[in-house]
Length: 248
Image (tube, rainbow, N blue to C red; front, side, top):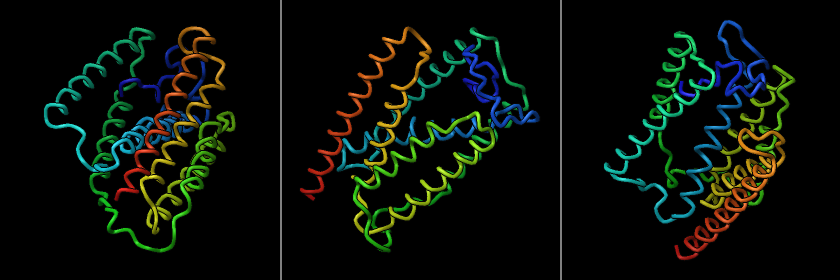
């Protein structure tokens, strides 16, 4: 609803034709791009970030990060950022989605949030011992392969690319749901999923040849710095988790 990239045929004037793949005229969306955005933001933007931070504080993974004041400040900054983001995008190409598209997006967003709160929280104590969880190296390796499958799904395949993404999503969710219930699943396994996601994102960025801002050299430098920081963060998180598990 802010960037409106799901509905904009020339988002940020990049001329990338993001909506052309598996396009549904009645809805004004490209199914591939919509599904790719769902993957990108639910797993990479939010899931990976949260899991990496939780690994840095393994003794309190379920504790609130902030109090009422902190939440209020973040909410205010988020609102200001939302307004600024919309203003910048609108100034660039004067695009506004239709009322039906914006209303549908709002309704679906609310329904997804309601569903999230209806899903019962499964504590570690309630984990069913149906087997032994594989090594974090294995879970991380599988997550890395699946993540690469999402990032490099060829959009020009149209609906085949949509099926590709749905298949990867299904495999990932089924495997996580199954193995996370097994004996031995720990914070290291969760970190392995986040670590793989961060590495996939950095490697994918290094292979891009079209920077959105600036030149190719600066894109390579900034991407390398960010990937290096991610590797350091993963190492630090793994070290803290293993130290905590040893003390526990």
